[in-house]
Image 1 (tube, rainbow, N blue to C red):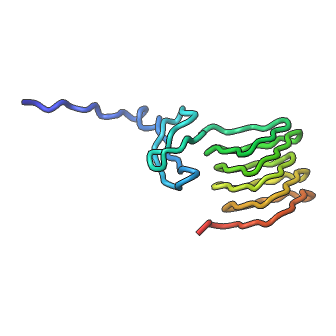
Image 2 (image 1 turned 30 degrees about the vertical axis):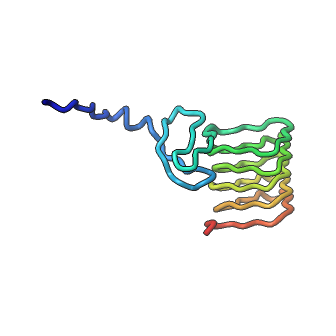
Image 3 (image 1 turned 90 degrees about the vertical axis):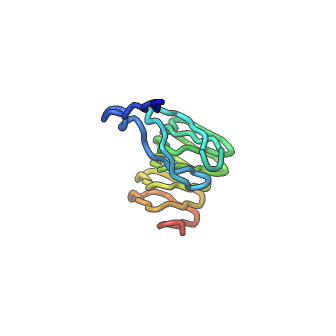
Length: 138
């Protein structure tokens, strides 16, 4: 009896997957490059994968994405926490920020809240209030 053969993925099919790290359990996994949301295989929590541009006022309890949160000049975020894969701030943020990628703060930006990130770049004239933990979390 012959065993069924599985097709060997071609070079274009291998590039359709990307590796992400879960924001909650920090476990790596492969997902489709075009996916917007997935459920973590390890902790079973929902993960948003897309980048999130914020161009106006947003008041939320929590903002979570594996992508990059960009707060534009007219953007204003008021939240309990922002959990993201990276952050660019040109406007105002009042939240506890936990980023697993770099946090870039523009020269006219304001951040009021604690920041935990692997790196932080701040433009001249930015206003920062809070405590900052920069570097690897462990």
